[in-house]
Amino acid sequence: MEEKELREKILSQVKEYFESCHKSREEFVPGKSRIPYAGRVYDEEEMQNAVSACLDFWLTSGRFCAQFETEFSQIMESKFCSLTNSGSSANLLAVSALTSPKLGEKRLKKGDKVITAAAGFPTTVNPIFQNGLIPKFIDAEPGTYNPTPKMVEEAIDEGTKAIILAHTLGNPFDAQEISRIAHESGLYLIEDCCDAVGSRLNGHSVGTFGQMATASFYPAHHITMGEGGAVLTSDANLKRIIESFRDWGRDCWCPPGKDDTCAKRFSWQLGELPYGYDHKYIYSHIGYNLKVLDVQGAIGLAQLKKLPLFIQKRKENYEFLLSRLGKFASSFILPKTIEGADISPFGLPLTVKEDASFTRKEIVEHLESSGIATRMLFGGNLTRQPAYTSENFEKSGDLANTDLIMNNTFWIGVYPGMDEAMREYVASCFESFMGERG
Image (tube, rainbow, N blue to C red; front, side, top):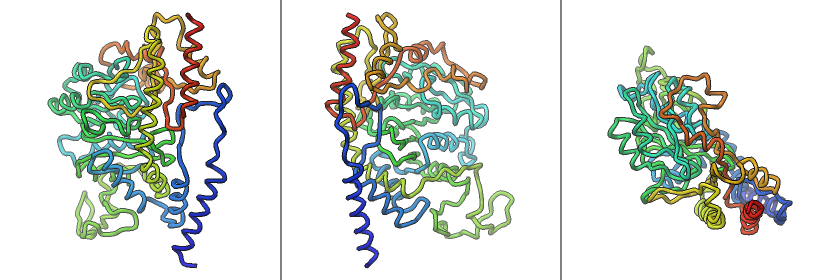
């Protein structure tokens, strides 16, 4: 049997396996079935691609990853996409890239300040510490859960060199105005889009307003490849730097299994090495090994085909729940967007108002006991987390809104695996809880 025919037979059997063992789904039973905040949504294509990559047995990044990088960069409207092993690693690479000697006098140096939000996920912030930089935490606006341009502007001082902000739960911050502020102040801007793939602002994809953007492909996110992430940029020099930090810090940019891409492998002289030292073993950065596997790229490619449908389903679930919960605006701060924002929602956040007749603990316990998963807004006020209390950071203002978010905010899922019966049940659980409180 020919290789192609044998492969087709195996992949056909994979489809049969999916149909028999994975496709069947237990019917949703209100009050008994659990509604997760997120989850993987897939079919036979992901499994066939994964098996096809295994049959290639090209164990590191290869043809599937290369194709994914091309297609994802087009979707995100960036010139370059560099895959890595997680969204957290993507943030680490993006911040580390700004410290590169290849940026000359524009590089970030130890002790430089980086503006970031106090209400967020730790690995947006951790790379600042890990590179010897100083986070300058700013507040966020309840409703959008993003810092405003004014908050950013007020935090800038002589030592500020960069800004890294996340589009919280897929809700775009005012990246256009903050990009203008950054440009006028000579600051770098990194957009953390890990929760925001598919979101747009003023007709442009999020991630296109700064020098770099990051994405995550963890199973909870808009698309998945298991673990995985990406750094996006339209700057060819930054792309080289990002991939150097990702690939051990090497100066060589040959893809795995290739040699002499530069056409002068034995004609370099860098550092104090002798002329002609093998370029594959010259290191220009204190790097890592944060690469991704081709089987992950293969799964991601199948997911990319579904991305438009995933975004549509997320929007439908978000808008349905928001319309049903709108009547409770006297008790909750409901989510809102800035003008020009087209949200690809990761979740639906709610903040219990201070004068409400119930606490966050009470509504969260009601939902959880009803089988509806909830989450806090990530780390709440990160400056109060045990990991950070002894670290060197600065604050702009008293972070009062961030404390409100820490104490009163939670969110529920809108992922594409949520069907009409599930979202109707979620809405009815809110209604029953609120009905008991008059």
